[in-house]
Image 1: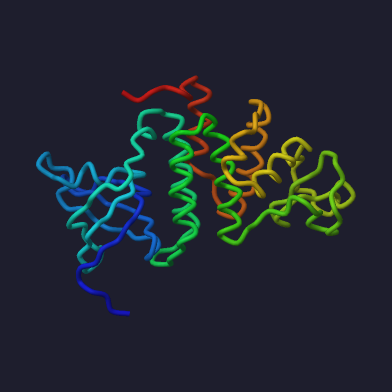
Image 2: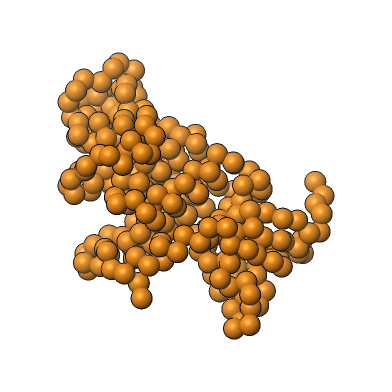
Length: 260
C-alpha cells in the first residue's frame, strides 16, 4: 500500500542507538502503525533540536519522511518525557524491560492500539509508583494476554479442574498452572506457591489502582519475578537482557541508585 512521502505519527521510543558520528537509529512503537525503525539524521550534533525529543521511553509526535531503507525523522515534539525513569537506575531497568518485551513480541508495521495504550500506562506506573516491581508484574500479565498468551491461573491447564487452595506447578508449555495430580505429565513444570498464585490472579483481574494497594514481601517479589520470567522466556524463546542487568544491579547493591 502506497504512503504519503510525509506523515505524522505519535510514538514511544523503545530503543535509541547511535549510528555513525551524528545519526541516531530509533525503534518506535506507534499507536497507528505499530513498530517502526527510523533514523534521526544529525540528532547527535550539538545544534540539533531533535535530541531532547527522541530519548528512550519518550512519547513524541513526529513528522517522518519516507526513505529508501529507513524513514527519516524530520521533526519531533515531546508529549510525555518520562524524565523520572532516567533518574533512577532500577526504574530505568524496569522501563527497559517493558520496551524489550514490546520490541521482542511485535513485528514491524503491525498496529496494536491496545498494546500501545498499555505500554504508555505502564511507563507512567514504573516512573511514579512506589512499587515498580509490582507495576512491572501487572504489565507483564496484561501484556501476555494482549499478545495471545493469557496464562491460566484459575483452572488446571491439563485437566481443566478448578485449582485447590494449595501450592501448585506452572507449565510454560501448557500456558498455565498444573495441579499436583497432573504434574507427572509435565516434568519440566516449576513450583508456584499459593501466595504467588493469589497475587497473579489479582493482577489478572484488577485495575492498577487496586493492584497498587497490595503489600508484597521481597521474597514474594522474587518468586513472582521468576515465575513471569519463566513464562515470558518460553514464549520469547530467549533470555531477556533487562532481566540479566537487573540481577546484576541487585548483586552489586545498586538497585535504587539515582543517575546523576
